[in-house]
Length: 478
Image (cartoon, rainbow, N blue to C red; front, side, top):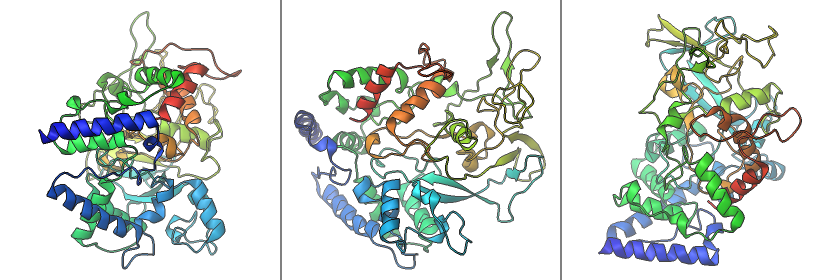
C-alpha cells in the first residue's frame, strides 16, 4: 500500500506542477524535493546533503577545483561558455583556469579559447590493441600511450537513471566517476570512500524536473521501466508542443525513448548505423541487380552506443565545410590502427581510412565509387582524413564503436546548451537542423520522407520548417 500511496502522491504533485507550470522551470537543484517515507530514505537525504557540501568545496590536496567549479549550480550543473567568459573577465585566477585545460598547457602565457567554448581536456589511455598512426600509416603513439580530446561538461541532473557515465560510458558508477573527476580534473589523490559515496548520493538527488525524479524513484524501488506511468502525459501542452511531441515520436523516440528519454527502443534503427568494415577500413556494400548498393549492417545487441555522425559533423566544421559553434578552436587530428589483441602484432583495420574522392582532390567531399557503384567510405559514410574524437572505441578498443557515443537523456535539454559531446551546436534549433539534414536521412528505419532544401544548394530535409519549430518547442518542455 505504501507504494500505491507514493504513486498517488507523486502523480498528484506532477499533475499540479503541470497545471500551474511552475516547477518545470526550476533548476535541477531546486527540483530535488524530498519524498522520503522511511528512515532509510531520510538517511539517504542526509547523505546527499553532506555530499552537496563535498561537491561545492575543493577537497584537500587538489588544485583548488571542486566538482561545482565545472558543474555550475547556476547553470543546471553544466559548464556554459557564458559562465566561462564572465568568470574569465572577473577573475582569471579562478581554479577553473588551471593549465591542464589551457589551449597549450606549456605556453608561457596560457590561453583558454577551448574552455571558453565550454570544453575541457579529457586525457585517456589507449586500449592495448590500438595505436595512433599518421596519414602515411606510421605508428606515432606517445610513449605514455595516452591521447587527449576536448569534450563538454554534462549536467549531473538525472544521473539516477542515465548511466553509464561520460559521453563514452567509461564510468559505470557514480562513486568511481567522482574519484576519476578528482584525479583527472582536480589533480587530487585518493578520496575517502565515505566522501565519494556522499558525492554520489548528492548527484543521484539532482533532477531536471519532478517528472524525472518520479521515474528515478520508481526505478530505485525496483519497478520495471515498462511498468512506470508516463509522467510526461501529465504536461499541459499548447498546440505547437503537441505537434512537436508527434514529431519527437517519429524522429527521436527510436534512440531517445522510454520514460528516461535515453533508451534505444528500436534496435533496427540502432543497428542500421553499424557497418561491416573491410580490412582497409572502408564499409562493405552489397550490390543486388537492379538495386543501389547498400551498406552491410552488423547487429550490436549488447551495445547502447551509437555513431549517428556527431564526430563527422565536427570534422566537417574543422574543415570549414559547415559552420559549427566550436569551429574556431583547433581539435585533435587522429588516425588509429586496431589490432586483434594487446600484442599489437596483427592489424585489423585503420580508421578513418584514407579518403578516395571522386575528383582525386584531397578536399573533395564526394567519395569515389567502386566497380559496383558503391561509395568508397569509412564508417562515417563520408570522406574523412582524421577523427577529432574516436568516442567509445577509445574505451572498448572495438573498431565497430569508432566515433560512437552514449545516448544522452533529453530531459532538461533546453537548459544545457551547447550540444553534442564537443559543444559543436550552440542552440537546440541548430541541433534539430543537423538531425533533419544530415542524420535522419541516413537512417532508413525511421522512414521519414525527404523535403526540399531550405536554402539553395542545401541538402534535402527529413523535417519541414514547421515540424522543426514544433519539435524544438516540445524539447524545451522536456
